[in-house]
Length: 351
Image (cartoon, rainbow, N blue to C red; front, side, top):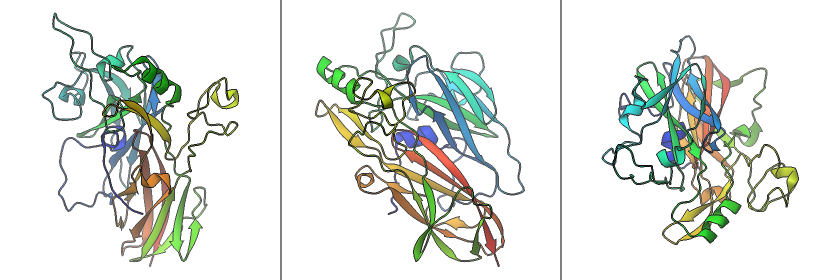
């Protein structure tokens, strides 16, 4: 099933949204003709104040091209109430010593430690008053109830936003709801592609470590399927995943040391302020498709939260160009809580 959707975590966490220009409506973003920053992933995908995080950029470099370097900054400036964009415009600039951003260096990866007051700066907690003024209001959550620390990757002439989801305590709720939420909530795990398959009468899995690239005839259409792991709502002690309903007491095997969640569409809880209660949900999953030659029928496909309950894959059609030669394919998987990862595959278009 192919269904496109966009949400705030998709825009912030991984879409590598270029803020320097707006593409024409007929531009095929799945076809790469020059180097492009496609995605930014945070590891871990969700974390707390004063904890370290690693940012990684996916830079696609079509055959025969050279990519510029990536320079990173961490945003430290709250968004003004009058600003309609996703972040304070100062966060898109280089570090000029004003304190709006912090330089994190250059390279495909960058390391940062979140500020001790990050849940006040970008989260649900009321920020402290500054300059004799009264305290401002908390940041607004996204559609999943999440809050994010923004980062910027400067790539050539463009600035692309990335982020890490914040694990903050609930604000302005009663004690019972806050306790129930903390008991059930598990931080997000980055989703991962479990398999890429070719649909040609039968489903043929395409291993990532295949020594020879998949060969496709020029001008043909090929149906491809990206799959991810199934995430059960029922906790199973001993499966290596610390999920809702498990803790160090009930399942020390899964919930001691480094905690791991499911790498598919995870079930999670959020606080529904309209209904004033903690409620269960499931992540949606989207996949962005890119190729150095030819193009995909859809630039992005995926499943929303209701669809991801019963399915673990999404399909797309790759249209091979008429020119034979090697093809690099980039597949970026994202969940609606801001998690991101990717895989790179290689095809060969034959005459």
